[in-house]
Structures are given as C-alpha cells and as structure tokens.
Length: 303
Image: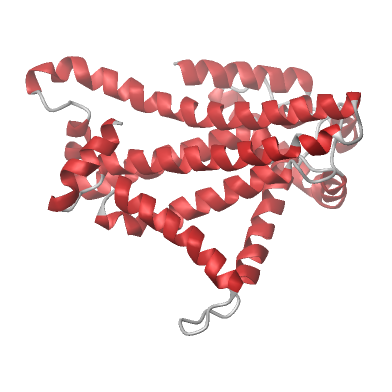
C-alpha cells in the first residue's frame, strides 16, 4: 500500500505539473532532449494519445487523466510536457555510450599479450565475479550478465550528470524505481525457477514452522520494501548531489564547482556499488548454494 500510495501521489503531481522529469528539471532541458523531441516527439505523442488515456483510466494511480488528453501536440508541449521525457532520452544515451565503451575497452582480447584496456576491463569483471562468488555462491557466476549490466548502466547514468548540459537519468525517481523493480522481479524469478513456487514461498515462512503465520506477512512486507529501499536510496543521493552542485554553481561559477566534482564521482561509484551488492545479497537468499558455501550464503543473506 505504501508503494501504491507513493505512485498515486507521484502520478497526481505529474498530472498537475506537466510531467515527472520536467517538473524536477523545469529550469533546464538538455539540448539533446530538445532535438530528440523535435525529431520524434510528434509521432510519439500520437502513439501516447491512443495508448495512455485508457491506461490512466484503468489503473487510476497516476492521476485522474493523462495530461495530454484533449490536447494537440503544440498545446501539450506548450503546457511544459515532453512526449519523450528527459530521463528516457538520457537513459537511451547512456545505453548507447555503454555499448561504445564496452566495444572500445574490449578491443581484441588476448590471453598472451593483453592490452591495458583489456586488463582494466578484467579488473572490473573479476571484482564483480568475486562478489558474486562471496555473496551468492559458486553458482552465482550465471547472474553475472544481469548484475554487470546493472552496474555499468547505473554507473554511467550517475556520471552523466557531471557532463555539461546533461542530467543524470538516475536523478529521476521513475528511472530508479524501474531499476529497483527489475532487480526485485529478477531475484524472485530466480527463486521460483530454482526452488519452485511453493519452495520460494516457503522461504518467506522462516526456519521455525510454528512462527510461520507471523513471519510470512513480515517477510512479504520486508521484500516489497526493498523496492522502495533500492529506488529511494539511489534517487535521493544522485538527485541531492545534482541539486547541491547546481546550487553551488549558481552562487560561485568558478573553481568551487570543480572542487566538489570528486564528491560527485565518489557518490556515483558508491551508489552503484551499493545497488549491485544489495541485488547480489537478495540473489544469495533465494539461490541454491554448493554444500561448502551454504552456511556462508545464509550469513551473507542475513547481513
């Protein structure tokens, strides 16, 4: 209910203020966002005009009606809305950059004479593999593609806000909520796949059967709260860092903004690390462990 109420409140604010991302960054829209909307906005608006009103009326959690209902494209934009929101354009930009960065860093892989780029990539890969082995178990390596994708996209998203005329997509709650929901759905999918539906539900009952009626609802609420924990932590830190940096830059435009950039870099790296580590811990709770690692996995899950 807490998540539903938050979504409903956020939806009402979006309807009243003309869009979630633009309400948060109404004073500035990056040039890349303006151009993308200029090129593709009218077509996207027509699609939304056909799809969004029925969704708003059916779900009734995003507001009484879609903000663009009954408007033309020009009226919709003039009201302060964008058919393709800032955070969506920024995240697509990050995904494109991620592909380019990986292609550049990977280069030609060689076991005999690895390049500096390959060695740098291997350091990151081995770090994530080591965490998966410690927190999930020996079988945790199969989750590497998902966890590494989380790490790369979130890190690049956080760092995007440090570029000129750019906004970090993770400074928007819609984006961090989507990331948290993806992590939540994935580790529950893994739990059901490896333990079966009944086995996964039994996990929520706790080790003592006579306490199951008490533990089961507590564990369900605790797991649902992880969505808010993951999304709000990432959003709050990145949004707060951007707001502080922007306020300081408006007051002092030289030297001082550059001095606080290391703090922004530290925040970006730390929040990425926290997100992927928590996702690994949740995976460790629901995954099968090798016999030698079972006790260690339970300790990590409890932590």
